[in-house]
Amino acid sequence: MIPDWTHERQQMVEEQLRRRGIRDPRVLAAMATVPREAFVPDEQRIASYSDQPLSIGYGQTISQPYMVALMAEVLQLQPSDRVLEIGAGCGYHAAVLAMLAGHVYTVEVVPALAVQARQNLERAGFGGRVTVLIGDGSNGWPEFAPYDAISVAAGAPEVPDALAAQLADCGRMVIPVGEMDYQELRLMTRRGRELDSRTITACRFVLLRGQAGWR
Image (cartoon, rainbow, N blue to C red):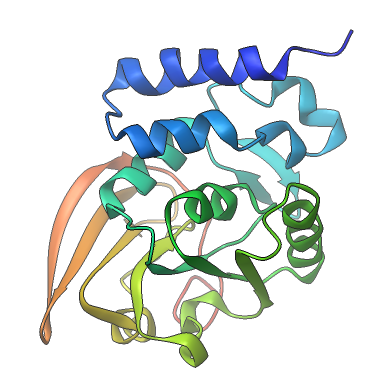
């Protein structure tokens, strides 16, 4: 029996997001619209709207729905914003961001996942709103900088200098920073040459790989 995905999506929004304090109506609408089941592997599809991250292979995961919504909410995205995402994974998080912003540029270090993300986004109707690059996300994507917002979906030992340099003035970056098995989700806001930092919550993400990540 095929699940009623629309019902499961609405239930996820009510029970996992709204009850935990997600209030931005645009974020709630995006989470209620993007079909998460279209981005998870076939063997995980029945758990598409479970309150947990799910494995997508290659040691990577699709983040818990609440964390996707929280990161999107704190970025306060505007419809004209240019967004850089680090860690495309299966493409789901990029699709949510694309519902809220002008265009999303997403970088994935695992080539097979980047191809998968591109295919998932095309099938779900986001191909024209998200551009996927295979590369070292810790170096960002200088070609399209500066970015109004940067969303990092992998835990970093510290904020990579390259990402900070690609953030526009008054731009926001959300990034998990800390140890391998424990991080703080931080919101960084550029004020001229300075980066203001605010801790949002404790978290645990897969590790950022690359030149400025974990080796």
